[in-house]
Every structure is written in structure tokens, then in C-alpha cells.
Amino acid sequence: MNKDEILAKSRAEYKNKDIYEQEIAKQANHIAVTVLLVLATLFFLVQILAGKGMNYGIYAMVLSGNMTVSWVRYAKLKEKNEFPRAVLYTLIVLALSGCHIYHLIASSKLC
Image 1 (spheres, rainbow, N blue to C red):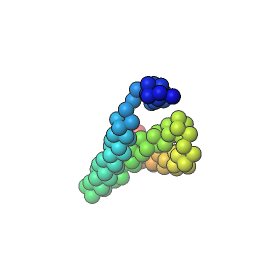
Image 2 (image 1 turned 135 degrees about the vertical axis):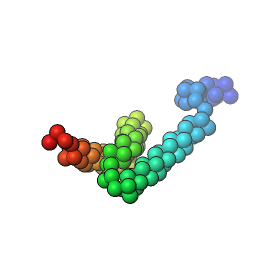
Image 3 (image 1 turned 45 degrees about the vertical axis):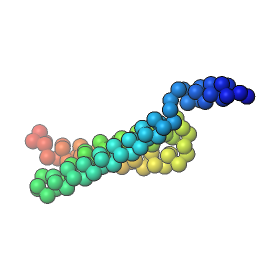
Image 4 (image 1 turned 120 degrees about the vertical axis):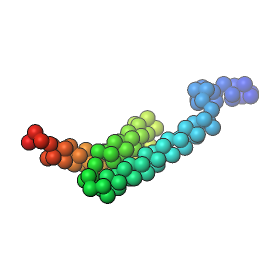
């Protein structure tokens, strides 16, 4: 196999995407999720300290991103260790969403 054949095979395998770009995108994704969690925690604590109760919806939205990433990695990359993580994130997102909706309905003036 000559150099051109190896290069063509590599390009076909990575669909002309640079491995470095893929690694940067992966790191950016991890940093973005971390920033989301930090901001959600900050907003959650400020809301509690301001006496406005708890907003479970903030964490439900943030963790839904983690949940989605885990499900996609499990489905597309066949990473078996992502399945339990995806299920756990799904259960947490459902619980937080349920709490948020319950608090909205319970505090509603319609009831």
C-alpha cells in the first residue's frame, strides 16, 4: 500500500475531518457542559437565597444536554458504558422536570 492509498483510506475513514478539530470540538463540548452546570448552580443558589424557592427546571434543562450526549454516544458510537449513564441522566431529568411542573401547578392561581 503506497502513501496515496493510505491517505485516501484515512480521509474516507474520517470523512475529511481533521482529528485535531474533532478533539477540540469534544473539549469544547465538555467545557460548555461544565459552564452550564456552574451557571445553573449559581442561579439555583441565588434563587434559594433570595427566598424565591427552588427551580428544578434549570437543572432539568442543563442535565438534558448531558442526557442527550450520552444517548447519542451510546447509539452512534456503541459505547456500552454510556447506557447506564444515559438511563441515570434520563431518570434525573424526568424527576427534576416532574418536580418543576408540580411546583408550577401547585403555586398556580388557577388551582
